[in-house]
Image 1: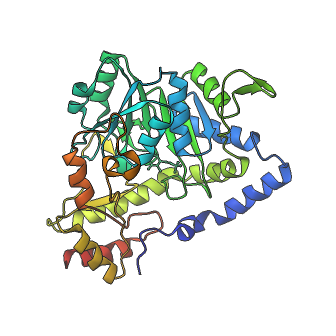
Image 2: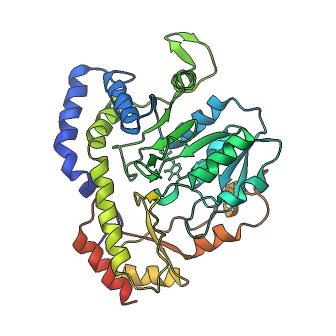
Length: 362
Ligand SMILES: *Cc1c(COP(=O)(O)O)cnc(C)c1O
């Protein structure tokens, strides 16, 4: 059996560190907005060479608070890729904003920069890029559009911790880089967790207020806020794991390279390009008979996942939503043919070679 993911195994190398951190928090007696959160925020900002990081309860909330901090008029349009994980779109809808779906590039699976401008209207106020599967979007073109049309840029970095475009880290291009530390992400906590990185002190202060009832000073509330804090325990675990993020990403790259070097050409593989350092949160292949292929692998004891089986515009929850109309054939093509194969920090090279053997014998 080769599981698609195994979190117990993935975290095994860090168990002693986690126990030490757990004991430290227990000794401290601080559980919310304490020294562990401050330490993690400082470390995560430094890791990105950004000025600030604000720990948030999870990735969806990190996106929501980033949008709130933009302070856009209700009904403003936000451009977002049509093949994203639904959380990006839910964040926009939860802020009473209108998601405008733009199709991805079939080669990169990321938003097609050449299709963004035609979607811009006088109501467009922001672009939410999603660095899907661990590959950065084509940020030079997107930055030019952002500047030209004076739009906010929010980066959904839930799948791209440590990914770069032309040596610049994901999350450092726009006003806000929103991260999820959901346990399966490239930097995963032992529960729900998230963060936003930014360079503007005003935005940092607003995010810090928004996550804590709109309050900067206890019992003085300046804005309408939420309870979206990141707790001390998760922050302590994340600090321990952050020290290994580069090595975990390098491991995924080593496994990905085995796929590139050994998989036969009947599968469509992700594109590789010198401008990008991909972190392979998801290593996907595409095949016309995807469902049959998945069943075949299941029979051979190989776990796979489809990211994602239903595109956002076909989700029941999004029927009739303003901004989601028309057809999105590229998103549908990806959703119909994509299959994610094992490529996690928990896997060893021998397991990936077994997956390759099974795939090549299909
Ligand atoms: C996981 C994920 C999110 C949401 O993160 P949570 O921490 O689960 O709320 C948002 N966007 C993308 C692209 C994701 O993969």
